[in-house]
Image 1: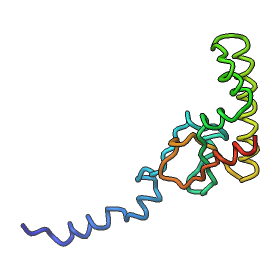
Image 2: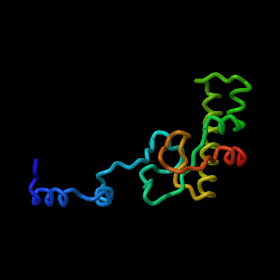
Image 3: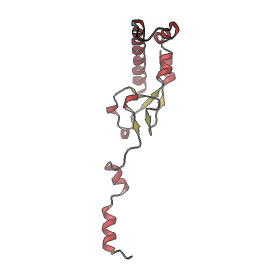
Image 4: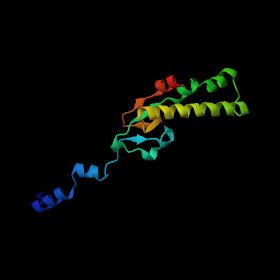
Length: 133
């Protein structure tokens, strides 16, 4: 089957180049951020093309190092009691303060639960956050 040269010429120039397709947003970015797993920072401020610093954390490990949470575990404080609520509020306040301090110190835009972002280079801050407690 012979295709007229004019048809080939038109088809070639009608298809955008890969670079222009990428720049126009025709390709989906490979970075995936689960907003529900952001522990510090505003996910709306995240723009992968600007290469902001992003860190990860394993929250359970951090909570296990917080004295108020250790009290819950040691004394087997029952969930739903006033004491449990008070201790968890104190533990969460300590957790958030430690995340903020680590983010500010390291210049991180976001701190995300481990596994909450893919396709993007991150730093694990778990050990450093625990040391800062």
